[in-house]
Length: 151
Image (cartoon, rainbow, N blue to C red; front, side):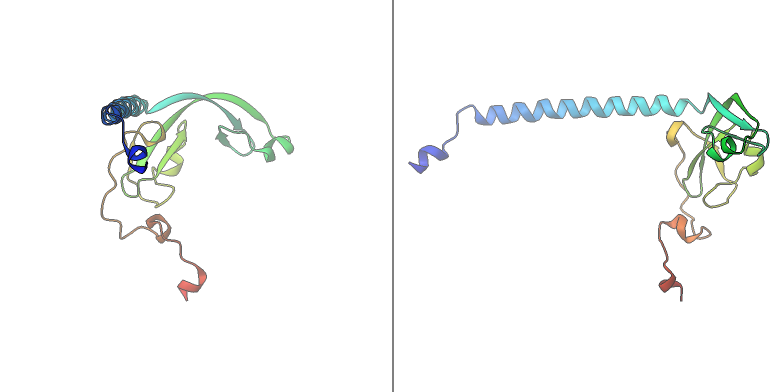
C-alpha cells in the first residue's frame, strides 16, 4: 500500500520543471524592470518641489515645522529645486533644497568630508564608496559604542 502512495505521476517531473522555468522567467523579468527603473531614477538628479520658507528662522524646508506655525512666523510657500547628492567617502545620500548646499559648504552630514557628488533619487546611480574609511567617525563605520566600551 505504501508503494502505491509513494508513486509519483508520470508527468510530475515535467510539471515541476515547467513551474521552475516559468518562475525563473518571471524573476528575470522583474529584475530587468527593477534595473530599468533604477536607471531612470539615476537620470533624475534634481526636481522642482513645493517647500516652505520661514522668514523669521531664515530656513526653507519641505515640511513645515509646527514651531514656526505655533509662534506665528512669517511663512511663505515657494517652489524650489531639490538636488540629490551622495558622499563618495561614506556613502551617505542626502537631498538639498535650493542653494542650501552653499551653506553646508558641500560637506557630508554624516562624515563631514567635502566629497559630495550628484546622484539620482534615493541614491540611484551613486558612486562606489571609497575603501579608505579610517578617518571616519565610529558611527559612520556602522559600530555603536556604548558608554561601557569607551571606559
